[in-house]
Image 1 (cartoon, helix red, strand yellow):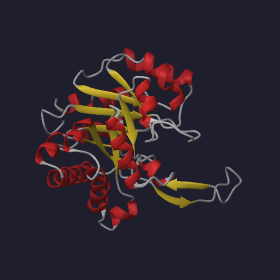
Image 2 (cartoon, rainbow, N blue to C red):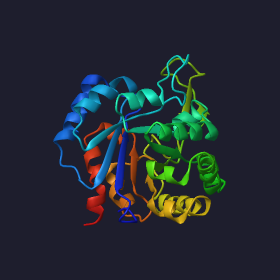
Image 3 (cartoon, one colour):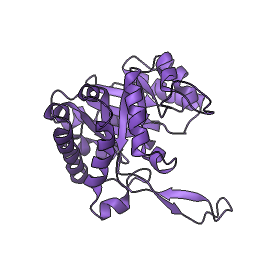
Image 4 (cartoon, one colour):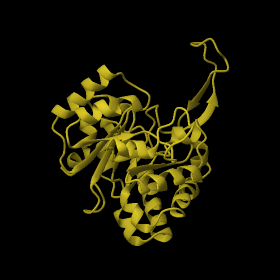
Length: 278
């Protein structure tokens, strides 16, 4: 359950680069027909070319987000979509700083902070992702890393801007090179994960401890008000089987869900907060 009555539970579904128009239409139709906790903010982030049809399909309780965007309003940036263009089609949310953007596409703390500030300027709310690698956790650098990532944002947005941000803590990917006989290419670059993508999840207490540290940092770097009111959600291999216990932690205000958001069990995750109160 959210640790404060003022923090409404939040569940995001990041579809990543998965699905077709047909399969995602079927999935969102199932969500539309399900009984969903009315006390939860629900946001799904489909691949970019499916944003408009799924936005039009989703029931009013389900918002649609982009998975990424460019901070400049327009220009010669082939393959990019601008925050202004997202606003133009009526989107309310964008995911920025996801671990895969940080690791696979080498987005820096400063770039992600710049994107986030630009998103707020055009009227978008942001799911702002932070998190450490397995190596950083094993060397006790978790708090240092997430504080650094947050510090970049603190520098570029006003205190009032935090009311438009949901912080998503994701214990995240670290690069590794594997032999991939499946592809016949020993140089195939894949990545191993600490808590994203394999089902390996931080314990509820590990997640709670980091969320509490994030809230403590916000209190010292911004204000106690921002610390108390900012929603901090967890994004490390959340599934129906662990969502209820995670939701019971006082500083976990929801989830950013990956693979499980592409399955009917996403409904159970959305409803986990009400189940945790039973």
